[in-house]
Length: 396
Ligand code: NDP
Image 1 (tube, helix red, strand yellow):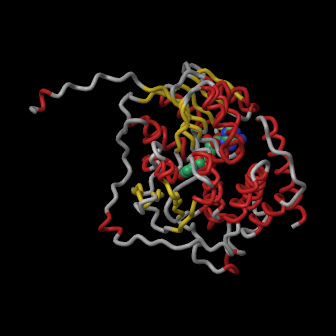
Image 2 (cartoon, helix red, strand yellow):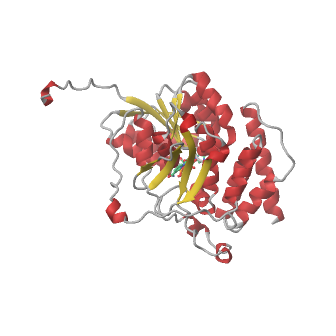
Image 3 (cartoon, rainbow, N blue to C red):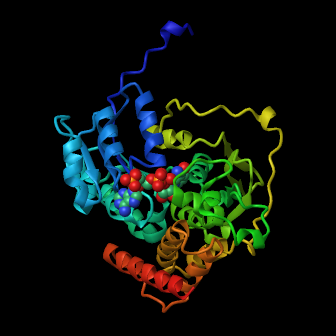
């Protein structure tokens, strides 16, 4: 067939997008893709926590309709910065929810921590396509969030590179043919460090991830391997598999982003260079694909791909997360809340690196809490988990 006989695709209307956490690492990568999309992606709302200057610059730059600052005390400052720009301004929790409720087809959930839960739930409730980077949402409220997505008639798409990889090779038509899913894990900056030396590591060392450039909290989570523990719980909610079917393997090159093994022994994987713009682009364009600028994978240059088992003794966070998943109910919420407090304390120089997992463990052994039935229960358990972690830090 001559090329001229192929009818050109009808032009598609631009896809409207709101970015929760627009000033973070995921938010910036997302807006980079918007800038390259030649108008195919248009921004409705952007949010940040306290970074007024960058939020205002980004809102002006991409012509957002609304900019929201979560810290309500900074409302006037943001208003001043955006004076005359035509960008509407809002603040606080209600502002975050307003951003999620704006009529954008896609809401990129890129806030870090449980702070992103309420706006993400709001986006799901109104039937948006939620492109989820904020894994803590699924850890704290997996069942509730999935129920909201179902009720709202929208879609939940993973942005985390591992889950994007699994999503791309998982046969949802025959989930019974899946034997296991295998999450790959770089091993973080301390993969080969003896335990004694791990005791001494500084926040700067923990933040220096060998293969990915990310925000502070997820970088520390990657160093303790709690990130992989959170991803284990995330995978359990996203894919129709049992906990025992999810394995974790260390893969220092971060080239194989994860794998699915089938009953016939076939293993399917998604590969690429470590650049979050690739999985973000996949979620933004789904079910189609859009161009993303990440470096192309040169397997000859990479030469070798290696895999090893995780060391549970030096990285107890992995076991804590698996236990919390098995236990269910309030346990994953407490795990996440205590981890957020412990990572914050480590970054502030109040506790040592190895004490992060210890704090989480102690918070988990506090009095058992009833399982959550609604968002308010999740928030109450989250608050109790944070209090237990603060008490554990004081005891240390
Ligand atoms: P960053 O710390 O770089 O950015 C966090 C964003 O959330 C910022 O916009 C920040 O605003 C905002 N924010 C922080 N606290 C609050 C709050 N209390 N209320 C409202 N907004 C808040 O994080 P990342 O971009 O690295 O990570 C975001 C999420 O994506 C995390 O859940 C992480 O686990 C996940 N993820 C990240 C990856 C990465 O490569 N970075 C990869 C896979 C998943 P401000 O700038 O004003 O503080």
